Amino acid sequence: MTGLGAAVWREKLYTISTDKEFRGLLAGVPRSMGLTLDQVAVKAAEKGGLPLPKGTVATTLSRDKLPKAEFVQQLLRVCEVEEADRTLWLRVWQAVADGVAPIGRPEDVAPLKDPVPGRTDHSPVAEDADSAAEPPRGWARLPGIARDRLSRTPRRWLVTLTAAALVAPALGGGVWWYSAHCGTTNPALRTVPAGECSGVTDGSDGHGIFGPGLQKALAAIDAENQAVVEAGGYVTVALMAPLTKSDKSLTSDRAVHQVEGAYIAQHEANKDKAHPRIRLVLANMGSNESNWPAVVEELKSMARGDDRLVAVTGMGLSQQESIDAARSLSRADIPMVGDVITADGFDKSGAIDGGAEIPGLVRVAPNVSTQVKALAQELAKHAETKAGAVVSAPETPDGNPDFYTQSMEAAFRSPQMGLQPYLETGGLSFKFTVQQGAEESSLGTIANNLCGTPKTDVVFYAGRATYLEMFIAKLHDRPCRTHPITVVTGSDAATVNFTIEGLNDPGAPISVLYVPLADPHQLADSANPDQTLYKNFAAEFTTAHHGQEFDEAHLASGWAVMAHDALLTAQLAIRKATGASQTPPTVRAVADQLYLFDSLNVVTGAGGVFRIDPQSGNRKSGHDPKVVRNGTHHP
Image 1: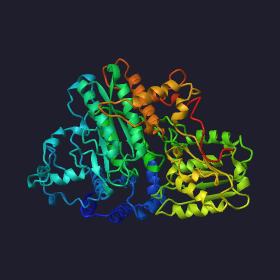
Image 2: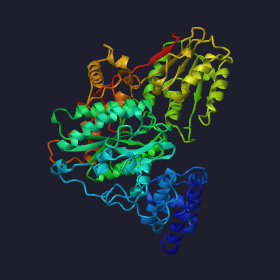
Image 3: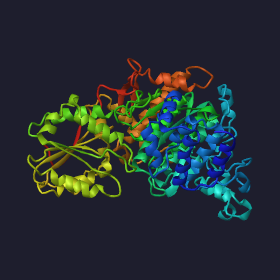
Image 4: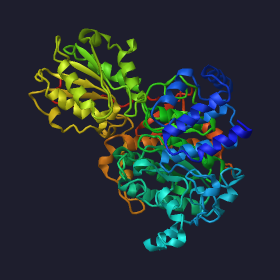
C-alpha cells in the first residue's frame, strides 16, 4: 500500500480506539488492494508463514474481538503493506489491546518529560534504539555491561523518589509512562486491561510486579541475577508463561510453584563458578496469554542484543496462543523447553493444530497419550468397571480450542488405548461450555444423565481441573449417588482439593484417577530408582536462598519439578554448546544440543532421568510417573 492510500489509512489509524474500529479498517485493506479472500489465501500460501484460509479470515474479521497480532501482521504482509505502515498497524493494535488507543497523530502528541533519558516515542510499543544491536562477539564484553536491555537505565533510583515527586507536574507525561508500564520505567513491561502486568523482567523492577505470590521467588531471582551480571560471563534464559490471574495483582498458584522450581535450577546452575552463568528473566504472557506477541517480540530482541538470550522455557499451556508463540520463536531460531505442556502434537512436529513444524521445541513433561496409556492399564485391572461416558470441554473460556482437553478426548477414543469397550457399553458422550458460568448447570445435568441404564461406572473427563471439583460435587448429588463411579482425567487433577466432601462420603463412592506430572510421594518412594535426585531437589527447594524460603507444599502440583527440569535441560544444552569457547553460544547451537539428549547423553532431572526424542522433541523415560487414585471408591 503506497502513496495516497497509505496516507489515508495512517490518518484513520491515529484516531481509532476500539477493536471494532480496528477490525473494520483491517477488513478494508484487502479490498483496497483489489484482493478477494480467495486470493489472500493463495498469496499467504506463496509467502509462507501463518495460513490465511478464506473462512478463517472472514471469521476473524467478523468476530467481536481483536484479531491476534500474528494474523494482523500476516494479512498486511500478504496485502503488501510497507513495513513502516505494518509497524504503525501493530502499534495501534497494541494500543487497542492495552486500552490506551487512540494513539493520536505524531504532531498532536506533546513531547513527554520522561524518567527514561533520550526517549522520544512513548507509546506502549515504542521501538528501542538498541533493539537491533549486533550480538556480542565474545565473553570479554560481558563483565562490562552494568545493566541489561531490560534495565538500560538504572531503575533502583526509583526507591529514592517520594510519591510526591512521581506525580509532580514537572514530570508531566512521565506519570502516564510510569502507569502504562506497571509502575516502572521498564519498556518491556506493560499494564494490560484488568490491571495485569505483562511483559519481561529480571526482578529489578520490583518483587511484587506479578502479584504478591511471586515476591519471594522474584526477590531470589533478582539477587541471583545481580550476582551473575557482576561476575560476568553469562547468558540469559527466559521462563515464559501466564504468571498472573485476570484478577488484578493476583498470581496463579501453579505459576508460583513453576517460578520457584525454575529458580532452584538457576541457583544450582550457577554454583562453583560454572560457565556460562545463567541469568533468569520472567516473561508473563498474561492470564489468557493474549499478550504473547509483545512478549515474544521482546524476547527476540533480547536474543539479538546485549541480553544474550539463548533459550526460553515454560511456553504456557496447551492452547493456540502458546502454539503461535512457539512458532514465532522457532522462526527466530530460539530454542524452547516446554515444562508443563502435555497435549499430543505440541512438539517439534507441530501436528497439534495441523500447522507448520516447530523446530527448536522440546518438552520435559509426559504427554497426554503417555498418561492415558497408563490410565488404561490401571482400568484393565478392574473387571467390574464396564460402562463409560466421555465428558469434555473442548474450548477455552475465550472460545478458542483447548488443545489439552481435545488431546485428552482424542486419546480416550483412540483404538490404540483399548478404551472402546467402556465407551461402547456406556454409549454416552457430553460436552460442556466454560463460558459465562454455564458450566455449573451443564455439569449438573450431565451428572444426572449418568444414572441411566446402564449406570455409568467410569467417566473419561476431558476437561480442565478448574471445573473438576464442581463436577465431583454434582456427581455426589446425582440420583444414583450410591453407585460407585470413577473419574479418569489428566495430569492437572494434581491441583484438585481431594479433601472435599464429594470425594470423602462413603454413601457416594467416587474416585479420581490420573497420572501426575511429578508426584512427591511417588518420587520420594524407595521404589523410584531416581529417588535421590528428587530428594536432593526437595532439600534445595526448602533451603533459604538470598533470604527467601519456599513452602514445601508447593511441590505437590508437580509444576516446580517440571519447571526445574526444563531449565536444567536448557542449561545443560547451553553448557554443551559453549564447551571451552570464549564466545557465547548461538541459539542454533543450543537448539542442536537439545536434540542430542539421547542414548548415553541424559538429563538427570528432579523428576527422574530422561532423554529427548530427537525426532519429536518429546520426553523419553523408562519410568514415567504412575497412576494416582483419590477418593472413597477403591475397587
